[in-house]
Length: 391
Ligand SMILES: Cc1cc2nc3c(=O)[nH]c(=O)nc-3n(C[C@H](O)[C@H](O)[C@H](O)COP(=O)(O)OP(=O)(O)OC[C@H]3O[C@@H](n4cnc5c(N)ncnc54)[C@H](O)[C@@H]3O)c2cc1C
Image 1 (tube, rainbow, N blue to C red):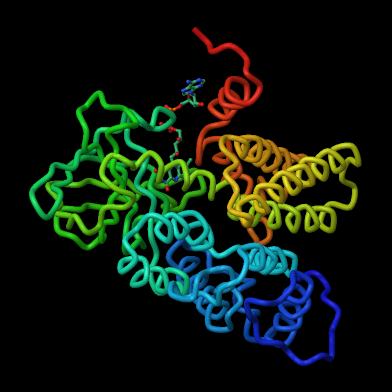
Image 2 (image 1 turned 180 degrees about the horizontal axis):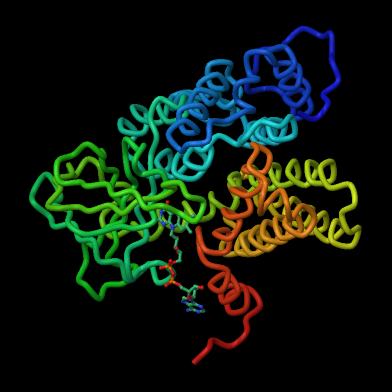
């Protein structure tokens, strides 16, 4: 853990009216005060089940103490106040050497979509459970044949009166084997209705007809799964955002992925870069400088996005820059680690080596998940820079 100076001031309970500086100071003090009991979260188990359980427990501690309830409305289990307050919490958590809880990705990505688009009684029921780590959700978007071209998805939902009958297949669904619910994109329009015929559903994963088949990633762990839907009944009350409006829900989710979730990622990369400097003191200064610049650029971009989201502004496709820089920075950082610590990454077997190796391997996926890098380039060139479309 990085050094946090001890402060004798009493620990302050989080509340919605705190300033950013007050949250920062009070959360640091809380981390110091609780350092002994939080220590178990710095050393994660090696298997994905163990990691998931440990991070869920960490999330519960943060929720029960109020820190990650900031910025969420009270009726959804929050304390109210601005979203930026819990962004400060995630930054301090990373700076103190704690891993980002898995569920932060879900919380900050799917949570805001359910808060915004789901019927009030549903969001009031499920969001407090998500925020506390009592349940987890997965994102059922990609299909074999519909990744970058998401609007061509084929999992169909057929209108059957008070419910939908869902059939089809999803793939690369992160941590689906642990998920209690799935935010699922389905085709309710004609097969060629593209983005206009998509409806988002909120599906309980224990509904009969759903099969989860874990897939082993390059890390050696089952980081994602295939999902098979065989005539699954989903009540109409689980429709999110209205029939035929699933594309709006999906685009909002992607903007969240590039907002608060990207902010957490940069905070974590910053901490990883600090570790690299400590563990590889002979690191090439030019490489170090470039890694620092890239992580710094991501920080500035995602700070802008976060502030805009906090102010309720619509950023359109601008956060494609954030996603592009995020994958560039992450890959460069871990390429630098491989150059600086080749034996650690390639040969050694202790915990430090394993963590570097896993992070290096996962960084390869950063230019694929959440929208591939080539797609971000297309969006930036065509929709932001106004360059002509490729024929
Ligand atoms: C670690 C990880 C976790 C994931 N988690 C989830 C999840 O939880 N939920 C979920 O729904 N999905 C998830 N995904 C899937 C991810 O969203 C897709 O992999 C991604 O959208 C790319 O789709 P694809 O794999 O079908 O590749 P394709 O779309 O087949 O693309 C293959 C290659 O072709 C390029 N390409 C495609 N179209 C164009 C074009 N028009 N112009 C230029 N180049 C193009 C792409 O950039 C890419 O390099 C995850 C993926 C990974 C790696």
